[in-house]
Image (cartoon, rainbow, N blue to C red; front, side, top):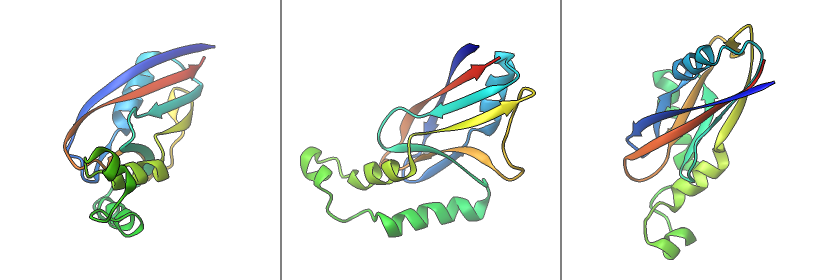
Amino acid sequence: MAVKTYHISLASKGDGDIQDLTERVAQRLAESELKAGTATVFVPGSTASITTLEYEPGLKKDMPEVLNRLVPAGVRYHHDSTWGDGNGYAHVRAALVGPGITVPFEHGRLCLGTWQQIVLMDFDNRPRRRDVVVQFAGE
């Protein structure tokens, strides 16, 4: 078994920005020359998440709206009292969605559904530079 690690660097607008990473992950898989195994996609940091969804205009609006109802910005979070940075909601949202996912691959292709894309969701209250770690384990 081989393990190969890649990085995807990108600029995010923050504030619920959602970016499709599917093609970039698939390109790294092709570069790895691995045919079967698992891909782990992970974002370091505590105010962004990696998940899957159908990357289309409606869901790109729905996800931030739902998360704002569940974890609203503009209310008091204890984190904000600790650091004074006003992004306590971003930390809670990121913890709920999670920092990474695992996707199997076979025949050198990610095993994603037809309408399923790998996305980065950045919840921070400011633009950020994000470094996404993509690691393939397989043969």
